[in-house]
Image (cartoon, rainbow, N blue to C red):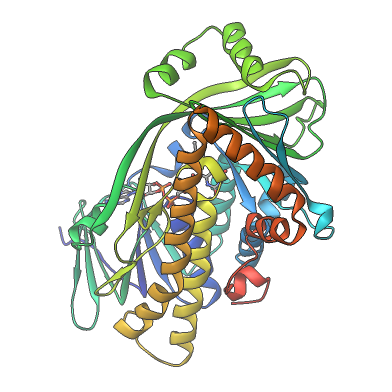
Length: 411
Ligand SMILES: Cc1cc2nc3c(=O)[nH]c(=O)nc-3n(C[C@H](O)[C@H](O)[C@H](O)COP(=O)(O)OP(=O)(O)OC[C@H]3O[C@@H](n4cnc5c(N)ncnc54)[C@H](O)[C@@H]3O)c2cc1C
């Protein structure tokens, strides 16, 4: 039987949070897309698929508003009002209070399962996006006037441009011959939700321990009023596997051991997940008729909760570049269009990846003089108001040359 041929403007490889957000953003500019994903969408909406909650910075929340996703997330989004960064049990710490900048929160914590469900619900009402899943992209071939994408099922997609949103391993990036800097952190992240006696008051806590950072992030209360938070706990791989299998009461004791009793008695609220942590930075954001976005372009440590935020910045920048090009009647897959995107995203992604990695190396040890120096550093940043404001704006994702969607403007 003849295999179908889908004709579209943009072929998006990978329907993770970034690929699906990009499809919605492009639709706002009347650009059609086909998104291909390996997984069956029904398998990705069950609670067991992903236990993570993501810190969505204020700038990223504006992108989600601009693409029509926010109404689906609003009631699942907990505002981050304070950020407290501390070094183990040291009494010196850095404290960001959103009121020092105005009334808006730094961002929101949203569990990924709600974001994913919201994305599917939006896509179901969007005629300019076709989701092909489950299926696998087997080949992406750039030609002079377009790109041909071949799927394992035999379906073909003809588009002007392909965008690789296929995550850290990114087979599309590899097949295009774009190299990447890559290493394993030798750390895994244990992720789970906890219930606790006292309210969190919108405080996000990040504690640097010798094995790696330990974060407690505020979630909305459950419908019965139970206070909830999300935990990201980094450990050496063998210890992470061991802790993840502990009986519930011993696991909770380990959390108290690391975080203390500030939230009162803690309980487990759901399952536990373990994620290996890998760093990836692509050498280029583009290739012939190809752009990279999200973890395919930059996979960073969750220490600063910025991975998805970087991906949403890619979405906002790429959608803007393509929308401008399309409005002028230009070829959206042409080299000069892609060059604009590559220039825009290059500095931001390399800069944040380097800072995140440097922070991690500085804090993931217990060497006496280093610990003293960084504690003094934390306390100093805490007292130097202008420097602190820069860091706070960075956490909000409102620094730098922002794409229109991140400024809260229409595409
Ligand atoms: C423990 C942890 C905590 C985190 N916390 C935060 C946080 O607080 N804030 C934040 O901003 N970020 C956070 N992140 C990072 C964030 O989760 C990722 O950056 C984000 O999910 C990446 O999305 P993506 O769509 O680019 O990639 P992925 O989610 O990896 O999606 C890639 C998709 O491509 C598909 N695919 C792959 N190959 C093919 C192919 N050949 N054909 C078709 N489909 C294909 C895959 O099936 C997958 O669905 C965290 C990460 C971890 C590990």
